[in-house]
View (cartoon, rainbow, N blue to C red):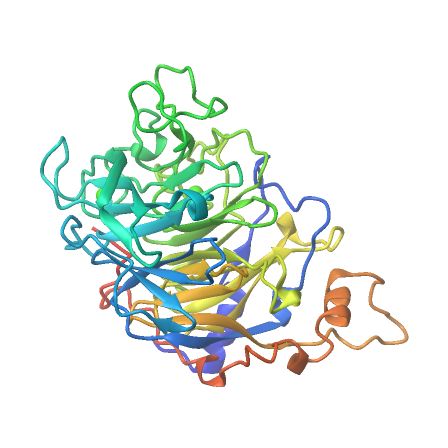
Length: 475
Ligand SMILES: [Ca+2]
Ligand SMILES: [Ca+2]
């Protein structure tokens, strides 16, 4: 059924994303301070940077002051965008050892060591094509590589395997890598695949599947090429893998740390009904259970009714499949170009191309859960990933090969004060619009003018049954 656009839009605004009350210590409400712009006042657009990549799936920067943006191509290459141009020669080409045959397989993640400038180390996550050394084709490999003799060339012969995970099915391989504010490498893994988590990996603590792993790649211990951080939550337990930080994940397709607060934001892809955004605030002791496959979003999955929700961490937002079909987790804005966006988390749906922002509501605003969420654009392509440059500006990759910078199209001024009901003094919205965004035209800096062609491109109705979606895999 196709609805007239205006009705569909109104419906989507009502139905689209439901901010949820946090119910666990880790996701409970906003911390003190830091409320930001009300995202419902914001309209975003994007600006094309390059458009000739082949199925880009990750974006990273090296943090070395070079200003380069690195883009992962699923087939097994890492490309460099320097000064706004795509360099012809890949930074790394490991297509000889990557199995990219499955829709969710390939070279999936890249993260540079926090001291990359000094040690030249960078880490990748890929599906191997090898059938040796205890591996079978399709298994997940996390490896370290080292820069070569040139700064724009990684050395493909420098591979040092850090960790591998046997994969029972071709889908749900996670694939992201990120160094936390603690200096440890965080690896989000999928539940292994198929549909509905037939092996029950989400709730098992003796497997690395369906987890966040947290490892120390600067030390080695117990014959492993890494060490276990002593404060990992399951250290010392014989029934659990000590690498595990949290569990109950289905397929965390893109996660990122807030570069200021250290909070972890995750987009966890749903099964057939609910896509979710999860937040783990910095300072969590770890060991939290994010619900899969007992729950999908805030809804019972197994059993379908009256599931045991005790102790489960619920998402801060979710949307159903009338609004999108496969979440692409994003980034928290901490850049310089748009001060008004400070602290907003941007994420999108691969299929419907909707872009949303979540921000903290001011204390006392009566917003359930302390977060407010709004759709801020419809993107021009199918978003596969987000990433940051060294200045904290957010980029998005589209499956068709384009990389765009997120840009502000406009911010609605706060409602004018009326004599009978003046706006609350010092409210976050009023402060943001007064200090940072007096008019929309002053929001975008001179060097980042919005490109109106991208805003609100009509999106097709959800096409989950006809599109071959890379991160959407139903059995
Ligand atoms: Ca798998
Ligand atoms: Ca969950």
